[in-house]
Length: 592
Image (tube, rainbow, N blue to C red; front, side):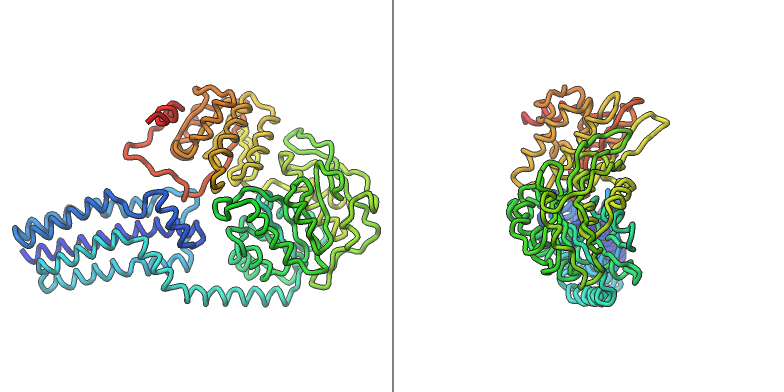
């Protein structure tokens, strides 16, 4: 009997390791998406009710107590049978969590691998201890202790991961310091002209526009994709910056005060570009003023011989420009005092066309790379103070009026460093839309155009995308969206406004996430859309299934935002349905 109980306990302990491997894989995925910030992981687990999976803990606890009681007072055979019954669900749950579909899957970097291994050390030790005890004789008391520890391992999985993170922090800090030292040495040795780009929206597209413009005459490196964190920039320098690069364009992301200052201390930008200031990450920083101050860290870090390029159509950017200690060049669509402007904007043939107005160069020499190079101060004045070049026609592949701002920012930097107007205009016409940012995708066989704006997640960009959809030739206009997040107290209001705008533009809307999209649904009805034209689905896979059965030749489909997995709504017990769910689900749930 003791041998059977010991074998059952050993197998149950191994199954627990499988279960916790899946659980920790899931927790580590969320942790990685939140840039390994413990407070953010804790917040998301609480919001998603995942910190303590009550049903699982209750079921496991009941079975463990039953097994311990049977072993002590009834039958070790019966106790072993109960323990064997825990194995299939433990393995099934572990495999489910490990293989859970993800928008952006966990990347098992060396850091993630270390964390996963350290977080699994306690259950592995428990399994080995159980096997060792079973090889001798597993008493009822020892079994009860093992089962109690097993239950605690399940219950405290998040704390185990966070404890592993704290324990490994000195190791990670040492590794980071080594990478940072290497990056600093590379920058000091090569001394490229560095341009920092930040803003609540538009910074990634602007970065690629800058690469196209500056790359016309100088070898230019831009940080890839969304590599805009401190370690992402460090990695870019170490892996991609070559001696041949004369210009380095750095996208600077921000989640808290000090992030941009830290990046500036690393790369020492000479030119700073601030695209716009809005309510992105409002939940993290608390107010628009705090966001403006955080973005202003780029201005504060510019050297006396530096230069600020910013958006005259944004009042908070103008406020930063007014306190600048360096020369400023403003770009604008509407502001008359801006040095770099656009007029006659129109969308035709899948391109955005406009007249580009640039300041007269006045024979100034281009900025030399390195710390000694300084943008010409005389370009800070408005066009009336120095004259301006005649307008040049630009026909860009970027869609939308808001993208004109991104193109103008690049044109302004090109003017600051001394590029000829014709060179700037030619480069702007060659810029391609970055992936997932109002990227048109033509399905010629189905006769459908998809506008992929999955990376856009702010009110300004969403409004601009809907305007692009409105202006696009189409038999019907369809929208797929999960809404916008991290907008703090304004989130519900701004999502309702998104729904109102969409209701006035779209013929059909697919809302992804029944709970989160409730304000959009209300706004759609307020904007004049009929309930029958709204579908509510649980994830993007179900949305795709709806589109497969609903689209017709001539349709244009806008995918607006694609939230990371931290925002995925918990799945209900019932299986997902392939057919569309009608919007009545919102209305019915609103009365419960």
